[in-house]
Image 1 (cartoon, helix red, strand yellow):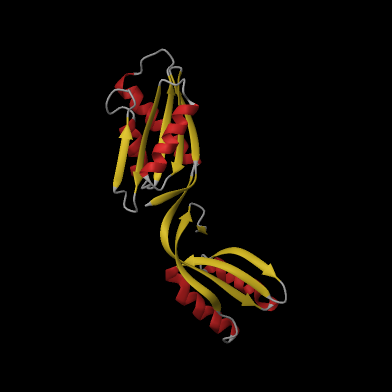
Image 2 (cartoon, rainbow, N blue to C red):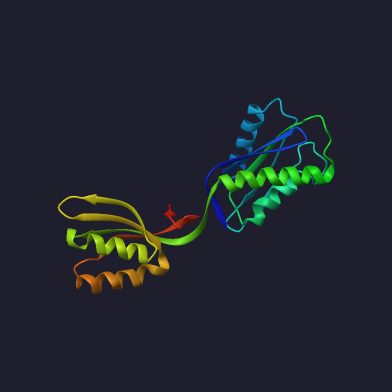
Length: 212
């Protein structure tokens, strides 16, 4: 499942009705309820604030609301955008300002779906992976080679500190750890190795970068 790393916003207009969508990362139903209340307060003059959210590593909890729109025309389409993109721990709220023209069932479904997709496109999403966080100390002569190895093994360099030697803070998928350590050992004849190795849950975003 994918997690929302950066929240997103989108907008869609259909026959003068404006649909404003917001997507948030949420970790509990209580947090989702609090955000829904905040959005309703912010857009107090809107006709509808429809929403859907999915929680759990496998999307076990799913809730949605049409908030006064005809049944099945708002909350469910929003939910289908989230589930169809394998998103979890996320909340999407679509606020509607009525434009004076009835859209019909098909028009409403299309509008709420389109607004949700616009917001999702504005988000940065990531996939949960088994990861490793570690540090590497190296002589300046190895800096270029280590940077090249990190690119080869798809390893994220979180930070680089230059002092008497160079300290790399790294994040990588667990599956590449053994191969990377072997390559380091062979390259440096055993003089370079990782330290403070810690297994953690990480997210790989759309750019291929790992983050905690």
